[in-house]
Length: 323
Length: 250
Image (cartoon, rainbow over all chains, first blue to last red; front, side, top):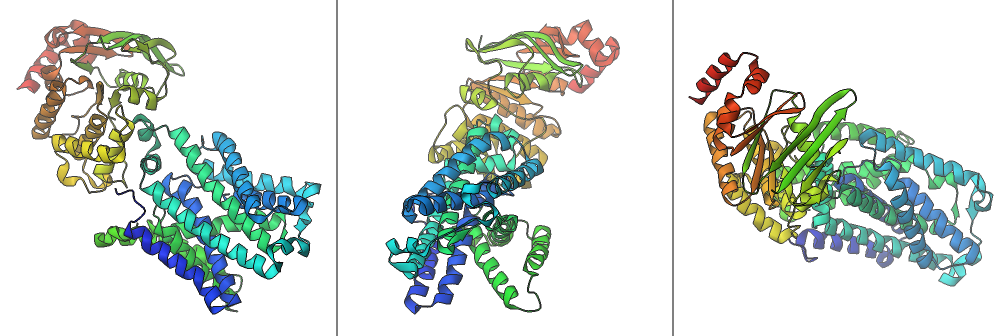
């Protein structure tokens, strides 16, 4: 268990992310930028979810709630007080972390399916709440006035800023995932995943560990939401608390391999490609989730540890290079 | 006296699993806990290790009241245990399993020292060759040894062993008994639940007998094995029991 950042399994992953980030500005391609923005968003979301789902083994089904809350907090700060994106984004993340810490005290007492269902309930409850809050625009949501983008040098550069921030965030979440995996904290979380009763008897403060993991895994989606809705220019409850996005996150983590660092990264890229291909194909148009569902079914049956988990299991040589 | 159990009562609904059980544990001894199925032996371990808080009574460890503390706190104070129904962390390797014990137990080690400690422990328990294997792939006797290794890695003051001999063949039993005596020789106090009479009679310094949640006898192995109440609790027929104990011993 080496704990340094110069581990080959992390270095190549970061290099790939940096190269990906630089392709759109170098080729000056807007299409590429949009596609990579989406990929980076998926990576950041999936890798965040991996902390609570992959390491601690708690299936947070309504995890998108933090993306929505972070989005709303940041959007309101920018909309009402004209605050810059970066502090607004951090505020969104912090609010999410605090909410997760408080909420975790209640929902993390539940295990298995009960926990999963409770988190769906939380998402739906927050959505209903925001729907009824007049000052947040109710179900119609809020729209930016284009003047907001002036402090960023116009809408064009504002979008590029959002793009770079999302890329940095994706890298940060990947590094955090790696550091957790290689730490005592990570070992404790994985013990909880394997057998929570054994973990507490072995001396792990399971309650504290779960709360911390849940808090971390809520912090980053809050910032992702902030960036996304800033770029989007409007926010509404249907988009912010869309349960389908939650399912997408779980799919990406399981596809790549939960509890691994590379898994959520690979799963996100593959999912974005699958989705991209299916969405433009007239034959499948609205069926991309159905296809994803079928893939998920086969994964659980034949490759329950996901692609990375499978590769690490079958080819032990790869373990040094893929974490 | 290192541990004192005072008038402990534990009820599950209408069932009294432990009824005013009291005994003490001296430093460095091996205390055997025996009794028929359902006598409350594992419940007693669960109360001591903090898994269940008792309804009445106290558990005192080195003069400190630990009744009702969370299991992780009790483990960190130096009481480690194994489980009758093994609880391996399946997807983690054998080494990582034992590292968890070292990391979060009494010594609360960092990862690097935990790894060293784990390797030493695996050497003692004879699992060193399986260190890199996922714990889920071990067979039952190996999983029992893994339980013991994890408990041992935390460098505890007391180890509670819950039927570590069950399901082992005679050769494995002998091996395990050697390990237990070796651990005890290093100064760790041991409390063990066991059904295998000849084995527990051989290694224990003292024996406590439970039946229907009550302590019915306590004393040296030879005293306990001749106690009328104990024999009755086991088979109802004292003479038959004596015969069986003898046969098993041979």
